[in-house]
Length: 285
Picture 1 (cartoon, helix red, strand yellow):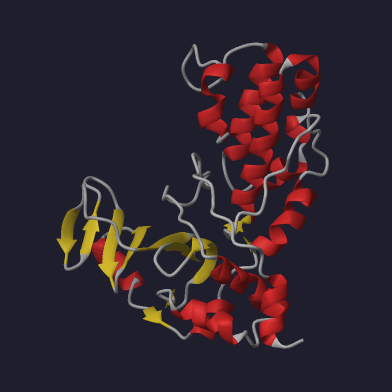
Picture 2 (cartoon, rainbow, N blue to C red):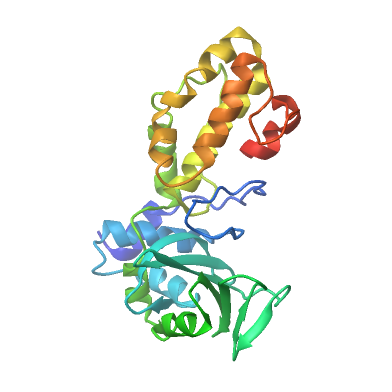
């Protein structure tokens, strides 16, 4: 199949992404807000899988060329959540350490300069560097160790950058199928409408949180004995058990499900946190 024909077949309709109120993060990466992705760019991650990383459509390469396309020698790309020409984030990992690359670079607020273009949050080993129009952030023993981790930062061509994207990225065309797969084993309320593909690329953890959160919120809003019976099964929802090895969002769902079933407060570290008063913000409804 010709490259451009494949791109047209895989590309979903353009839909503006809804505003995100909650972006769950894993235990092992800093809290950074995510950003919208252009549909054409989202297709690139899927093309990288479909074409085995060997060749890419001309349109895909043009879209990739509009991004920074930075890699860190010796570090693996473990997450590319949402990206476009103007905005995006990439996570690199090596020997138990992570680096978060984000563009555009935000203002140097609440940071202290330690050497050259390297800054840190006062009183911590959380360092940040402003280089090549992006911000790179990570924890290191000291500023020199952080600087050394940046020595391999370099720009690559579009094909090499596309080939470095992790398989965990879920492109828009794959989202609809992935959402249905994630709903297996989860009781849903009557009339439940599954989250739609939005023209964004999300990693599997983020998409799983969106799906499980939508179901939990729908049951809480419905209320009654049926909702209590459904939420009593939350600890057996397959997608939450899959996600629990990576991050904390499943535990948040389970806390709210348990509290809803028992009629008590949420075990949130302080008394008086009710389900009805806080579930929308906590679950990202």
